[in-house]
Length: 339
Ligand SMILES: C[S@@+](CC[C@H](N)C(=O)[O-])C[C@H]1O[C@@H](n2cnc3c(N)ncnc32)[C@H](O)[C@@H]1O
Image 1 (cartoon, helix red, strand yellow):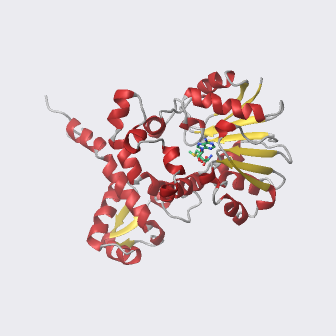
Image 2 (tube, rainbow, N blue to C red):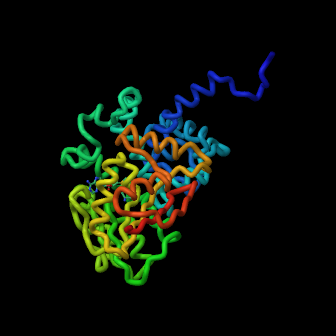
Image 3 (cartoon, rainbow, N blue to C red):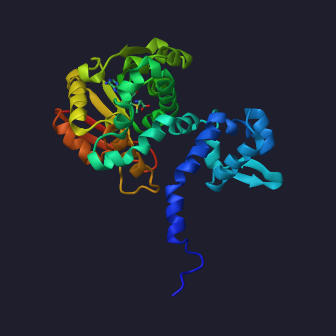
């Protein structure tokens, strides 16, 4: 029996899957060079190399690899152009992922994934096996400001402010405390959209460095405060809404309950907790949520959770699930209130 000529042989499919990281590295390198910023018009590899200080023949190989994955097209005269996917690599794109693509290609993650079998064997984080400490400890070390800067730049760029603005109604004049809010990009977007909202961004000292400037540049500094500390030691009081965006997915159940209890202790009976992040919905159209769940495990021994799984954590922290707004294509949003 012969297989249909259009079926991709299993050996080819498997090697395609296992070599996907090479394509990923090519796209990260293009993001590092800022190639997409020069593609407002189709250009040759030689033109792009001159604009990005690259070696023309080498750059051409990276461009072709990215084109094979649908990030670019190759037009007449070997000119490269951005597809809709490629446009998100531009720094000036409204939903730019350039810094996220740069971050993904960093050596720290390559070493972490290189230790993935250690996680499979032991259940312990590969990052800690590779670097001898947790990712948060590593990032807090002044010797690694390059990595923490890249991380927080990527988080600020990809903050889900638009999702929250579109899916959550804030009461007039409410005060929002963004717990683990990094450089304040989410808070800046919320305060820009809601002129009577005030807020506090709370995070570790290395994360809030730069928050004052980001909030000032956004023109909302007069309605925003910046507080440094660890959420394991408590969080600022006075919030009508407490936000945890892309935070609980970084922690195991026991740690998550400790964070939630700290937030609950700061809440008034009428305060609300809003959790934002990718959640498995059962309707996912790509493998990204599964990949992100594995990434959380390999990096932090943590996981993504469904609203029901959050509900079980809430129960242990004096909270109850009051709303779930799932989004299979981006971050979902759930709300909890004190019991
Ligand atoms: C994945 S980032 C998400 C940042 C931001 N909320 C967003 O959605 O873009 C997780 C955040 O948790 C913060 N974090 C980690 N450990 C913390 C701690 N012990 N106390 C406060 N924040 C912490 C990190 O510094 C980081 O900013």
